[in-house]
Amino acid sequence: MEDQKKDPVYGFIGLGQMGGPMAAHGPAAIVYDVSPEAVEQLVAKGAKAAAGPAEVAAAADVISVMVRDDAQVVAVFEAMAPALRPGTVLAVHSTIRPRTAEELAERARELGVEVVDAPVSGSAFGAIAGTLAVMVGGTEEAFARVQGPFAAWSGLALHVGPIGAGTRAKLARNILQFTGFAAAAEAQRLAEAAGISLRRLGRLVRHSDSVSGGPGSVILRGTTDPMAPDDPLYDAMRHALALGEKDLSLAFDLADELGVDLPLTRMAAPLLAAALGIPEKES
Image (tube, rainbow, N blue to C red; front, side):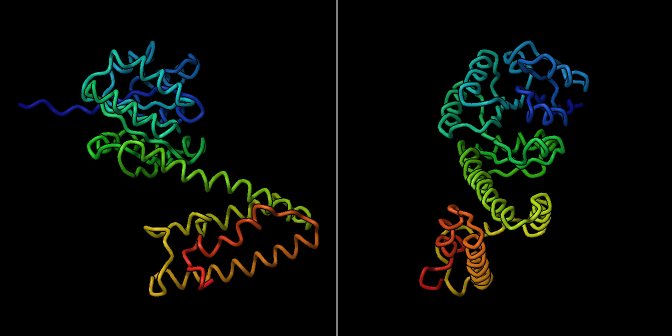
């Protein structure tokens, strides 16, 4: 009788604001963090506490690492390296430089270990809910091996290319996130000057974005090149452009009336047509 194939042992290093909730969803069997309190919470859920990264490396087949920055990621790898076993997959969830991920993969390959860079998006709320998006760079084989463990704490896991691609995708995604924060600040200043409740505005924005998809809803095509008029999306984007130009013009009139400065919005307005894929001569 053949032995039944065993599930891979999943290890997790870095149990902070993001890593703690991720690992708590399981199936992390062995965990490590510099904070004993963070480890104790996972032990209470059935995980084994490791004395350090090397003990996780010796026991686990798939290892997730969620620490602060490049330096910590490299330090964790170096602590694990003597104990890493051939065939292990190391997943780095920290947002680091793409080149750091590539260099780690080169070093790990000499040990027979695969690395995927797998940063996540969705904040601590997504980590707690188990609905994070994870963008994975690495080989197809490595991606196949991490899908099971990742499914416990993610709502969407996509393979976006070779090692380093996950981090590059995360950086592109975060342009929208953090530039959006600055745009939200301008919107709040205009609304506040107009006597609008900012809390109610926030509720309206979050609701409408949950329906429409927000700014990311226009990321639909496989290229940023201008669209041809026979493109299936052309009419919809042309309509969105007309609405945008009208509404921004009205917003500028209101801002001038109230004496509110909108530098980011004024900078973005001339770029709207290109952003929607409409050729300059058509805008």
